[in-house]
Length: 266
Ligand SMILES: N[C@@H](CCC[C@H](N)C(=O)O)C(=O)O
Image 1 (tube, helix red, strand yellow):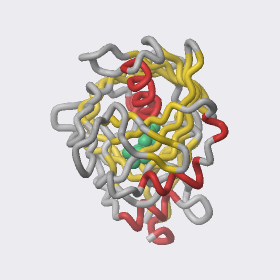
Image 2: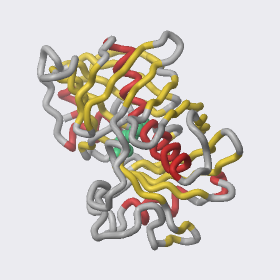
Image 3: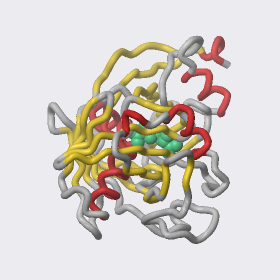
Image 4: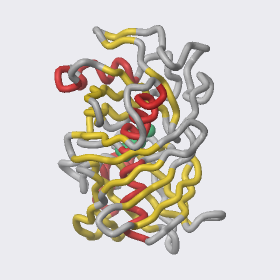
């Protein structure tokens, strides 16, 4: 059996997108891993499935490369807005609004959440500076922007051995739903960011990671809104004021479309 898909990316963070609004598509963790496999599948950081929306234009579901279903994906949301023209998108991370501006897409997420139960953490801690450390990375800011993130502000993000240290932080028992790990350096009007994504490892860019980092930087007066966030795959502009939703603006790119051979992948 064959199934049509689109391959898209947001700043190099890449997706296989299946439109299941008219023809349902059932995803198991095994199938998500098989599609995402870069040697034997199509290859992607996240698998995205579009379903009919009840109170929005559509519902977006997200599976990480490791087969786990998660709540939110900022870069994929821009791709979905560009692909479908949707202006309201429901997700497990909350309701999202999108606008295709031509060269760029703007997405409005919900308000960030800072309570320890919201992230979630295993027990109460000061989320503005968790009293924890891993190999020289310490006191991260923790928040939920639809999915859970830690943000470490460091003198030089390029020097952090993120591939080695990322799995230990992601899987620390303090984070019952695991966590996305951001290391950021702030220099005057911009933030330089690397993200070790839960369930996908270090990616070229992470939309929700950029939002989480910008919010943490603005909340701690390291940056003012709007702020440019530079990642290996490109830049996003993030705007946020306390008590307001987060706004993210950046590109979305269609790469190709094709058919999955589900018999081979299963
Ligand atoms: N690449 C995404 C985030 C995808 C989900 C994340 N790995 C998680 O597990 O929460 C983005 O652009 O936001």
